[in-house]
Picture 1 (cartoon, chains in turn orange, purple):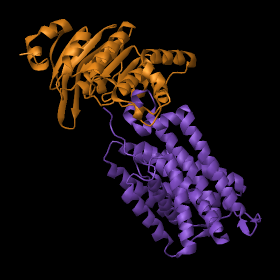
Picture 2 (cartoon, rainbow over the protein chains, first blue to last red):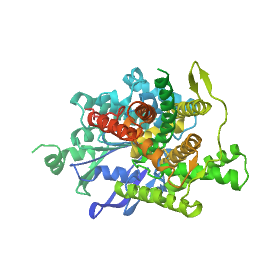
Picture 3 (tube, each protein chain N blue to C red):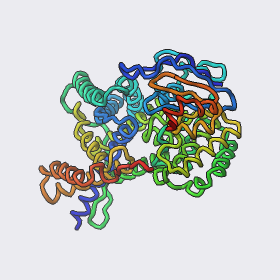
Picture 4 (cartoon, each protein chain N blue to C red):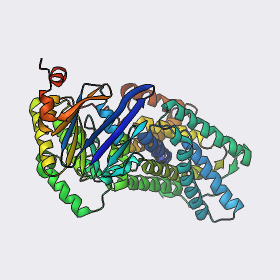
Length: 235
Length: 292
């Protein structure tokens, strides 16, 4: 479904990603794990075309999207939950969800999708007229996920959805990710919480300073000595 | 009491013009964090277009005004496209200096074409004032206030309930995330410049009816006042620009009547300084904190 080939990216003179290649198959949850600054967010932002790519090719559903205008990507079925939630704080919950469905014109289907989001996140329904900025961190994360789902994506990219949340909320978020995947959406998950990410995903890639240093089935990565030592805190 | 009320009316009159112009500053700032110093000069451009339309092209006043609005809108969109868009990812100081440059360029080109000498504005309204028990309400004041408030009302509806208006708010809050939503950010930015410039052209009409003299520097004073109004109310916030405009207009006109007409501008700037000391983000501005 998604193939990233030899992706390189610079921040000024800094070579941030060195020839990254990976792929995501339909129906999978694939996770990219790695320490802060390893380049995980840069990869997602390069796929979303928010960051300019130096070299490399990104193929989504058989078509190269390397030169596609970024605002067209949601129409192709690619949606991103940005790092740090980034809900529109001065807009209501309902308006945030409307923005998620911005390019769509099928009003009836949009309403059905919104009801489904409300069903999945009843707190959002209760607070639909509240400004998003007044929600708690966990509620904002749910709104960010709900907003991304409103474009009815084929591939959902999630950037650190567990960041800054309490342990109970973290496990709730990972349950939600599983549910979304079981409902038929492919998920590309970027996480610092490697343990959790590997336990919900099918496959994983380990990043270190802009390079992939390990990859495989998540179960195998969980038992990999190197990964255990560096990212799972198990000596 | 009559003096107070009539000065209050004057204040609301000029205040609503400031508010209209301030909307352009604040919307553009809200969406691209740029202080468009050429915004005031769009007033000058529109005024000259009306002059040319009536005296040179022989158009009717209504048609000339329409022409001036259309040209101002197109000019605003092109200005953004040519002068500001290429600098969007550069440091903000670059686009700020570009804006000042555009303003100077426009004033100098106007001097070249029309000479620096002021010429009379060809539209005057000669409808007798309404007498409200000793208090005179001029037709110009009535027209200005009704038109401005009506436009602000429409703008508010546009921003709060249409899809494009909501997208505008989304882009103004977080451009990157708006892009992730599939919002065509460049188109929304063009739309913002179009609306701002259109309001400036209408502001120009109302301003020139009140002060019917057209010169290349016409836009400087109302431009700077409207900019102050936008900052006073909280730059980037549409209701802030309206509030700031009215406060500024009323304060100015009361200061002229009761304190000193020569000191009125100093008093207005003084108000701005005092407000910003206590509310650095403007009257309606707030700092948004990140929630955990």
